Length: 285
Image (cartoon, rainbow, N blue to C red; front, side, top):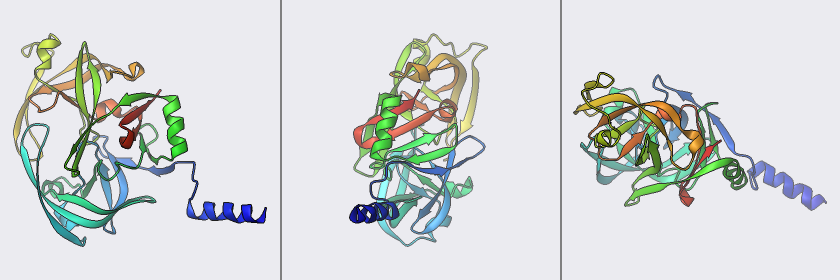
């Protein structure tokens, strides 16, 4: 009994055998994007948790505070098609609450300082740590094996498609119903709205010249102009989670490189659990 007591005490003190998830409260910016406390190489920041970034990013003002080793250059593409050449660096760690990942590759993104974002945490850092974003209660939960099983039992399991590019860039996709059409959409908590490829307009019977369609030209964060057509679709939701559908969902059609990119406007009333290692997304019912 004495041995059992001390074993229990040790497990409690050092976190062994933990069954409950770690809960981290978060704030959102004016567009509803998730801001979590994190540390990059020991430098504490309020970072965006962005499932669509592909790689952790640092603003120049933060990178200069971190001990970082150059690690080459990565050429990536934003959803609107413009090429971005990211200088890469290796830093000692990224920490979120008790979770820490060592020797992390990050990208330097000059535009972040211009928009007041110090850092972005992307999916490569969390590829082996299941987590839940509870948009309703504004909580990030780092799941345990037991809590993950409970989530899976109580939710709809959606198959994740993973674009893992050379172990550096990692993007997540799932099948969505867009009205009567189906698209393989990027899951993007770093995008305020929902973007759909223009080719879907014909399939959905949407006329660009209709009075219900608002045409506009915007500039992306990198300064590239893009024309988009804003309207609504009768329904938008995860294809294998019928209860997740949003009626009369606002979307913006434009010439993007994916079928669709689904952002915060759709997720703001959802509780989503990401288990990247097992290629699953769990949508709470």
